Image (cartoon, rainbow, N blue to C red; front, side, top):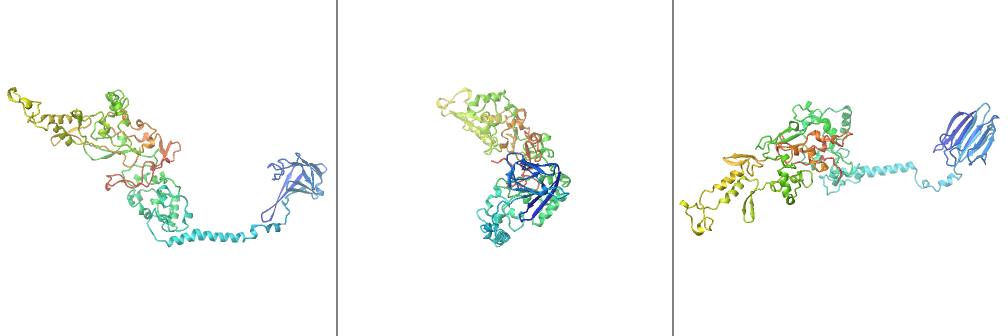
Length: 587
C-alpha cells in the first residue's frame, strides 16, 4: 500500500510550508526516533510510539508500541482501526495526523502541529515590552547611530583636534573612546602606552610609520645599509606582492619596515620574536643577489645554516682579531699556557693538590669547571677568570716572609713585580772586611748596625728566575724579552667569541659542561673549546621542524639591530638597544 505523507510547517511570519513524500510499504512506524517513518520531535512522543498497518479490507490498524497511547478523534486509546476514506485524526503529543483518501489515490496522512495555547494573542501582546517601545527597525537605527557617534565620530574628532606631542609613558592620550578600537593588549615593552594610542598611531587610518618608532628608538641601528637590504631581499610571490600593494593603500610601509617584524596588540606578554621566514627572505640565496657579501646563505637552522664563525686572536702578542669557521679547527694565541686536560685529570698532581687544600678552598677530589669559572649574576654567561680568586690558591705568588706575614707579588703588572723584588735588597749592606776580618759588636754581620753597600744582585736573579720559562710566571705565561728586559707576552682573553649571536647558559643548566666543551681532552690552551653546529642540532632544529626537541627560529640566537664592534665602516660604539627579543620560556 502507498501512503502520501504531507508535513505542514509554519515560518516565524506565519507562512505555511508543505512537504510531500510517498512511502510504498504496508506499515509505518511513528515515534520520536529519527529513523521512524513518521518522525514527531516531541518529548511527549516515545521513541517508538505506534505503528500503522494497512488491512486487506482497506482499513488502517493503529497500535501503540507501549503503554502510552494516543487519541483517535479525541478519544484516548492504544489500538484502533479506521477507514481513511471516511477520514480520521490521530493525536500524538502536540502533533495531529489527519487521514483521508480520494478514489484511485493513495491514503493521505497530513501532519500538523497543534497550537500550544489558545489565549488571545492580542491580549498577550498588551503585556509585552514591544508594545511600549519603538519598532525593532527604529531601535536598530538609533543604536547604530549611537555606536557611530561614540566609537567613530568622537575618536576621530578628538584625534584630529588634539595637540601633537611626543610619546610619553606618564601621559594619558587626548583621543577619547579610542580604547574600543584596540585589537588586544600591548606587549610588556610598550605596556606603558596602553592609554596613549596616538603615541604610535599618529594619523587616523594609517599604519604605524618608521619615523614614529624612531621617536623613542632613535639610537637603533639599521640591520644593513638600505640599498643593500633592497638588493639582498629575495623576489616576492605574486600573492605577497598583491598583499603589499593593498597594505600600501592604507599607509603601510613596504617590507623591511619596523611593523613588518614587530607586531603589537597580541597580548600582554613578551613581544613575539621575528618569524624565521622574515630572515630567510633575504639570507636564503643572498650571495646570488649580493655578490660581494661575506655572509654565507642561511634559511633554516636544521638544514640550511653555515658552521659557526668565532672571533679570536690568531697571532701571539697582537690585539688584532680574525673570524674563522670552527670547521677549520682554529688555534687561538691568547698568550697563556693552560692545558685543561692536565687540570681536570682525576689522578694527576693537580687532583692531589685539590684534595690537599680542598677543605680550605672548597675543592673536591679533583678540579671541576665551577672551581675556576664563576657564572654572572643572571647566569647567562661567566665572569672573567681572575688570578687572585681562581688560580692563586694553587699558583702562589708569595715571595717573602716577614715574621708571620707573607708578601705576594701583585699580578698583572711586570714593572710593579720588579719593584717589589728589588725592594727586598733596598737597604745598603757593607761588604765583608778583607782577610776574613770582621767588624766587632753590633757592626758585625747580623748586628744592629750592619750594612752591605755591595750591588744587590740577588734581586735581579729573582726577577729573571720568576720570568723564566720554568719560573713562577712562566708556569702560565709565555716568556719574552722587551727592551732588553725579561718580560711575558701580553694576554688577550675574549669574553665573547660569537660576534653576531648569543648563547644563554641559564637556559641550558640541565646540561653538563662537557656536552659542549671538550675540556677534559684538550691538551693545549690554544684549543678553541667552542661547540660546532652539529652539537647544537642535537636539540635545536628549524622553526617549522615538528620532530625537534626545541624548534628554533633565527631570533633565538640573533638580533636584527645590534652590531658587533670592529666591523668594516663601523665605529666602535656601546651595544645598541635590542628590540627583537628572544623567544624564551615565560618566567
